[in-house]
Amino acid sequence: MFDLKGKVALVTGGNGGIGLGMARGLASAGARVVVAARNAEKSRAAAEELARYGSEPVVIAVDVADEQSVQSLARETVARCGRLDILVNNAGTNIRKPPQTYAAEEWHRVLDTNLTSAFLCSRAAYEPMKIAGGGKIINVGSMMSIFGASFAAPYGASKGGLVQLTKSLAVAWARDDIQVNAVLPGWIDTDLTRTARQQVEGLHESVLRRTPAGRWGVIEDFAGVAVFLASAASDFVTGAVITVDGGYSVQG
Ligand code: NDP
Image 1 (cartoon, rainbow, N blue to C red):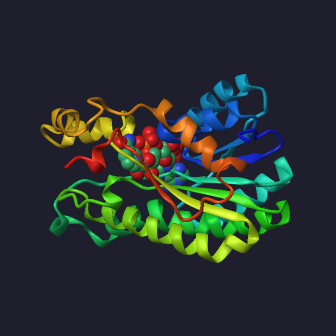
Image 2: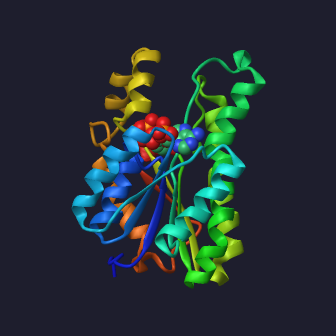
């Protein structure tokens, strides 16, 4: 039920953080992983690590905010791996400051990287998934898909939009046997939040206090949910939004 042998999984931002955590899960279940990100050195290191699971990982450089780059990513994936079954829209960025201080360019950079990218990658994956007879798309949202944050207006808008995009794609592509779901991580220890901890005073302590599990998440927390949403185990699950947050979002 959880076997991914013979499947090809494209993970944007798969060279580190949550994307790598998911890529490890997918590779350990037998999928051939395509690591798609900008930093070639990080991607090479991730691929070397993923190779230990047995299938031969592929590295493809992409800027997910760039339409042409995404188009060639999908083409190259199919050319090199022969198919595309699983897409994880994980690449993301944040610029933290008060809403009134964002330049329009900064707003667009966050929206393009976090939200438009997921649309572009999903659009590019649709045809290959149809040819493969179905597919799985996993979008990585955030607690800010649900909550407001004074220091992250464009990020919150992008992650809220990602949940609605998930639902629309799920409805549109259900008859093509393509399931589209979202994972909303709580506070996870990665490069992204290491800078947040430097920029937002008291963040580390408030996350520990507010999270019922009493700890920050780690990237290993994302392997299982990725395998579930990428495998036959979730064939009747679509348009769902799954929190992986140690209880953060249900704390009263
Ligand atoms: P990281 O900074 O570790 O990872 C971000 C990844 O995105 C990197 O692999 C980066 O690779 C890639 N990336 C960024 N911009 C682009 C781009 N333009 N084109 C291609 N790849 C890009 O952070 P996380 O692992 O924490 O974040 C992963 C996802 O999880 C994001 O969507 C984030 O919003 C979300 N998230 C994280 C939370 C957390 O607590 N850490 C909480 C909630 C959500 P490269 O630089 O090589 O391109």
